[in-house]
Image (cartoon, rainbow, N blue to C red):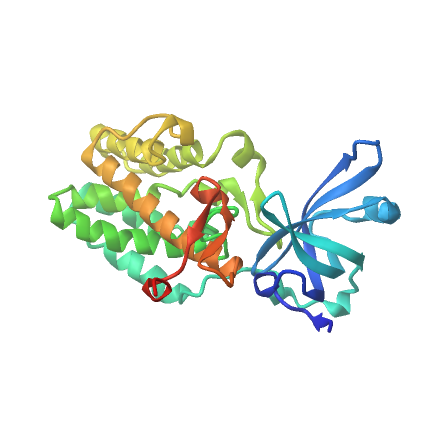
Length: 322
């Protein structure tokens, strides 16, 4: 039986479906015998899936651009351990058939309430210089308008409108606890949490239905962009101490932990070590939950998860040990 407009996260293996998706990415490739085909990533608000469009649809190849809506019929399958949508039919969707809300991922958090929580924490930090810096960032209306919309990542975790806001708020809760537990510099750590991904406001393009990278995001990256944004604000505070500027820059450039994962420098202060692990805790646990939600399973194990070294994740409980 054909279902109408199910979300990708709700698809069951082998079940025939008919639904609407958006082209997130496309790449023309050739088979071993030289036939052209399109490798696609199709998406809705619940996630993305790979699919291939073969030569019988060649007339559609030039018309399928990123952010093009399509109506598809097919079934969920698997190829080399990865989920894939096996297309039976595909056509361009008509404008009246599309509900944009089905394609835009949003945080479930209350955005005004979450932003106010972040403001309250930052405006209560004890260091006078860092508080002035926080006030400068929080009084920038354009920056805040971007901050409440930006995703925390393109796809790995909190990849939704408001995802960065959600990520920073969760990290601040952890940072408040750790600062007291381990006598860390509370002001420095909290500002580091707020600033660590601020460059994503310029790195990620979240003005379209599917998230991508700006030119500066692809060429420069959010770590360098974040340092630039920090330096722009500090230039408006002529008496800001050079040492505190340097420590904040270190927090931003070291928060990925290792050069292998994009950090120009590894964490070398206690606050930088704390920031790296706080970031990793929220990213990994949110990423785990989101992957499980996008990849429902009838067994105790999920499909392979790229974020977790391409390993399958265990989601069973003690009741399975009977």
